[in-house]
Amino acid sequence: MQANNQAMFDKVCAILKTHAKADTEITPDTQIAADLAIDSVEMFDLVMEIEEVYDISFPIEEASAIDTVQSLIEAIERITDV
Image (cartoon, rainbow, N blue to C red):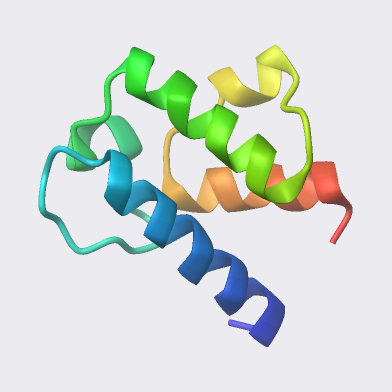
């Protein structure tokens, strides 16, 4: 993992941990809903926090396609054009 990606992964993990209801090790393949027990309402809050941290706005279709930590990071990268 490149330094930029590692920094983003670490930041996203820190945010996820504040929303997770399950105490699970977070990897790129971690399922946000299933593994971290983040429901749709909490996911909405998570997306809003990510938008604020990265000063971005997720299109609805982009946000609804996020299911793993890796897909969240890829979405952030697409939107920020990193």
